[in-house]
Image 1 (tube, rainbow, N blue to C red):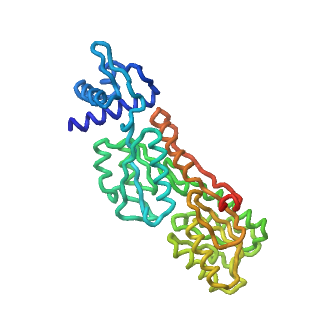
Image 2: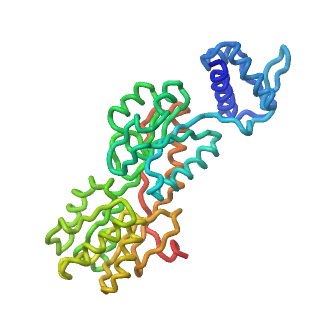
Image 3: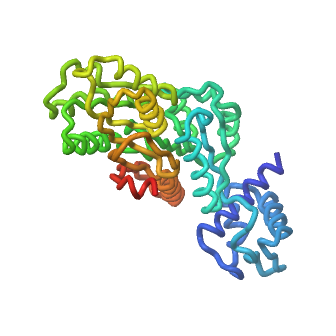
Length: 351
């Protein structure tokens, strides 16, 4: 246990050096001051200083004080951030975002400790018990904040709140809680407007199952289009690559006058298989398309002149890091950052 405490004090000292931007030769506060601010005993603080001295981060001058030698503190972690990840093996979005988070947090000198969900779910609420080691780590104070790529259950969130653990969600819907989220309603509204400009009269939506709450807003936006008979046929959903192809087959099976003449697609992997299936069918059915794609995932689509909106996952990761930085520096305002997808020239995306 003594070793664990010493490690925590080392992290706190490295964090102090980095976040106060101390330079080589700057002096640390006296141990009495550190004892009060860090909440650890003199012996533990002395042990941590000794280890950082051996690592050539600090210099101890007898009867004078402790001074910074290497303010970068290479190889040492200032903070440990938990990352709760879910369904990485089936989601290019989450896999890419996880990697970019690692980079953004590492640039601030923070270490990421991942926790993997043993019951992957792309549409429901996650449970703390599905992440081995997470509860024990929180109980031991092993992480100072948690970033999640999926929404936790209300019971799990109450537990994190009882431990005063900042918890930040990154994802696609604006729900309660602190989060960086993609403004999907703005995308849907703008995408439908672009399709209308191109003469679309009966648009459909192809959406991941986790975005089902947007169904009501989609049908409301359809009021601006002249042909909306049988609107239930215009809302298609799925999570995986084959689901995009299945959505295309469903539309091909309809009589031509009931098929949509445009589709707003909320997922680039669904768009890829959707357009590939239409091309493979040889039917000549080519609805106008608006596609939301991941800027970091260089994916092309078997269609001509689509309306493209992009999401820069690096901006999502950077926003999460900024919000946590503010929280660690005393900002108590809710951590909330909406990201509006950007309408992009397809030639710029695919060049």
